[in-house]
Image (cartoon, rainbow, N blue to C red; front, side, top):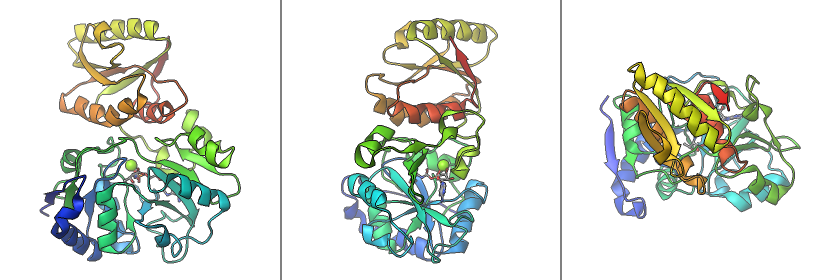
Length: 349
Ligand code: TXA
Ligand code: MG
């Protein structure tokens, strides 16, 4: 299959209407279109068409018990596909949609089990990205979209990442530039009485609690070796080909330990990289230094993390040593992804 790749202006995607007409035609005839969102790129299909949705699993190599997120472009599109919306859910919708928050509801019959991974619930997201909104509007159906990476790889934060993983396997890629947030949406289950965060993201627990009061966080997000409630969270994920080790502790000891580990690795002639921050980059002496971002602006680290993990593959790195991010804001999401990339390989200093 030849993959059509088309660029749109992230600010003014409406100037490229013919591109959206082409993309909508593909979606409406059961094909696959990758598109930008404010979090990461998604791989879209008509969420109501079980055959189209099956193609997503095939293209990504994704296990079929891992449900998809359904994307909408207006709140009115929510009512036909979910059976009940609690007051707390309404408050979250009002506060955070459109934006990087996914809500889990009980589904209606028009959502096929292929989309919900066999569950009676369905995950819904109303993205703020204009290109994503225009595509959904033009297709006039809800669009099921997981992240547009090969299963197990870091999520794509630019069109070239999607092309690298899926070129020749999908009908079209809409290139709308780099992702604003760079980590996947926060997922919160509002299908039962007490809301529960299943995946941390840029919308933090505190931001959610400011709107609806106490919420739980799935213990698997924090504790190792616990079965997560979001099926997709149990899979090894975000992994570069290299061995990743996280070093956790105060900054001074972390730098010392990483320098000693990197020295050992480099002296064995192993291609080595260090994931550093603007605060520490000048203190490392060995290997390739990759600066994730600024510790005082953790959103910069969130935005760059997947790009850096992909760069490790590109540079043929075999051993990665990363600093740790231990505050409880967006750092929770950063560490959740980093721990998966490391297969929970952490050294405490
Ligand atoms: O930011 C995002 O959410 C991106 C963009 C494209 O919107 N999408 C994304 O999709 O990250 P994906 O498929 O990579 O991750 C969806 C996660 C998986 O861990 C899946 O198991 C969980 O959501 N999920 C989906 N439906 C669910 C449900 N009904 N109950 C529990 N977890 C669910
Ligand atoms: Mg994914």
